[in-house]
Amino acid sequence: MVRLVVFIAVLLVIDLYAFQAVRFLTRQSPDWQRYWYLLYWGISAACFGIILAAQFSDWHLWPKAFRTYSFAMVFIVFVSKLFIDVFLVADDIVRLIRFAAMKIPTLFNAGPSSGHTGPAITRSEFLVRAGMLVGAVPFFSLLYGMVSGAHNYRIHRVSIPHKGLPPALDGFRIVQISDIHTGSFHSPEPLQKAVDLINSLEADVVFFTGDLVNNKHEEALPHARALSGIRSRHGVYSVFGNHDYGDYARWPSAEAKSRNFQQLKALHLQLGWNLLMDEHAYMTAGNEKLAVVGVQNWSGRGNFQQYGNIEKAMLGFEPGTFNILLSHDPSHWDAQVRDRYPDLHLTLSGHTHGMQFGVEVPGFKWSPAQYFYRQWAGLYSAGMQHLYVNRGLGYIGYPGRVGILPEITLMELKNS
Image (tube, rainbow, N blue to C red):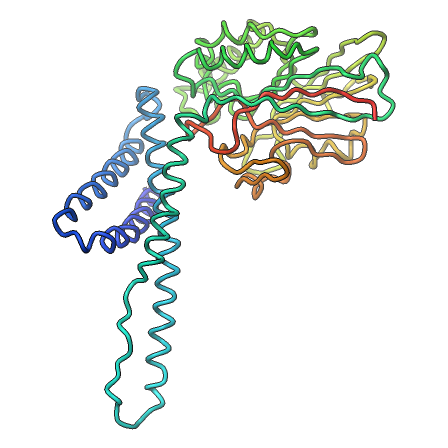
């Protein structure tokens, strides 16, 4: 309860501060001012109502569309107001400095006042307008990301160099998908579109690197027909991500959570996927052996689970000509893989989603994800080893994407 009160208090401060910009910009239109005030506080009241309702009821039981877009509205509204507040704080700092500059000299002046009181200290119209303009950018961008970005799938084509790669593996085509989060989708059509794109790439093998669901196995059931249609020469190999264990849901009992876990494992098999739970497998191309190792979720960050056991997965492992590790969380690569297992040439991860927000143009990419993860999107290399972090096919929380679009990765092994 204390955390809720503090959280509401912080949001209220953000709200009241941003409201000063509305007051300032509507001061010349008293006839319209009350309507702007009603609009502003009406939206705020709706946001606070959603927050309180989520605290005092089981929001998991809300209709999916209402739950998704109401939480998104709260996020968008307060993020936009926070941008406005940054400019208002900057203006207040300037005003404070100006005030101090006028007052301090009078402390050392015992003579009569000249009668000059200095210019009136008023809020800078430029900074207020700039704040409103900057606040409008995330507001409209995030709205656009929900309408256009959520299912705007992008195919990223990547070459994976490997010295001495034999001809049988030179040009071997790997498709990676990750973080589908079926619980966030409202209909099967978007994922069917993604599956059609995947199959058009005619991959030798498809790898899925975790987070099939948000919380519960039944989230994936409406999409089972589409996902079971993924085709490749060597099939589909999959691992679990942090959301696949049901750790973020409320369960009536430990048995219910365990049953969900077993049902999700069974669903991978029903889809025709080869689920690797701390184990390895092999496939052949010509006379060459390609090995794939799959571990359960293992994170180098303390706030995520460490279910995986790479030592168990490597028991009895015989290196192939090229060896691939499937591990959901990219922090695993630096923490355990890169130095201890040099025979694992390529690690495939997901998890970050690129935070579903950022800027990505040729030669430059930025996302808040980079402040949390050293490797957060794309290809990273160290000597003969490579890590690829997929940006994710789905979404969670915010039901859209801005700048960092949903990804299907096509990799080709190349002799270097």
